[in-house]
Image (cartoon, rainbow, N blue to C red; front, side):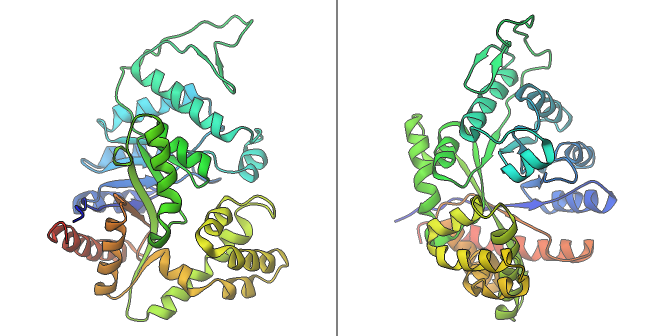
Length: 352
């Protein structure tokens, strides 16, 4: 007999304007657990959270992700502690390394030693959130800098617990997530091959004297409530052509590696080849329908309810969804429908 936990709901949000803040406000009223704010190369992830914190009461607010390397660990800690104070304890610091295309091309900083940089950033942020003096001798960061005039400084902000989540895809970073983070910001995830990710997180957790149950496991999914399953799956599958072809270089694409470890290597390579050759339409058509279905909640209510059970049963604690419509009313209506389905699944007898 297996006992399943409660599956929670998070949303992707960008509260940089009134419409974005209204969406987070409505999600708060509906009882959504977390609003996750992204950071790519447009708006930062931190400032919109301050705006959302001012108009909400209960929903937690997280970065997914704040890019490691674009800020010093101390600056990350200062900003995170500020947002934790502004939000009355509802902030989650979600961290990720991004990739060399963004870090070196947009920020102009080296993309080197990503695992060490992540681990050391977590260590220093935790030191700051406890109110410790920042003294650290790491592979990437030294505080204070040696042979300089700096001194070990204790943060003046009030110490406060600060949940830290990590976006990770590769085995080494997954093990680091299990060893050092409070939660996992998962992506490229199929319930059917969950162990590709969860075994590594479990190993990392056990190496640190913890268990997989100590890590809040969240994964990203799209949602489309529809009776035309094949057409919807095709639309969602098409979008992965950009992921496989453009979210990285020809030799370095973390998403492609994650899909390959789950058995999609030939498909990913074919799509990437077509994209890099300039045939984007053919690349989109080459993405298997099964990827569109497996990465998303697509179909009529009964089918979505069944898929939600699969996420719950394979050990996921929370799903993160994008907008379900193009207007605020559509998004709120879709969110309400999904919440009802999620509540149905969570109300089922345990151990079935």
